Amino acid sequence: MLRHPFLGFAFLSLLAIVGCDEGKAQASSKTIAQYQQHCAACHEVGAANAPRRGDGHQWGKRLRKGEAHLVQSIKSGLVAMPPRGGCQTCTDDDYRALIQYMAHE
Image (cartoon, rainbow, N blue to C red):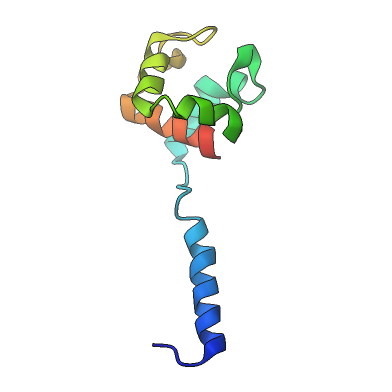
């Protein structure tokens, strides 16, 4: 137990700073490569009303529908997005990682 008030405050401040990044997982190099190859052309600029990467407002509306719904939309295709987002080798786990990357990066 820390007995000095300043050290206690410093320790708690450090925990708060470190804790802020815990909810934001780093995307794997595989996810980033898949994003660049299959998603970036539309999701970087918002083409055809695609939600832009990192836009919490646009992604929030979609995430409220649930991740399973989003994965199914990707697999089926939606508006201008082709079925499977054009990634024939992506798994459901890949799609979930891509969703998280686009929604939170």
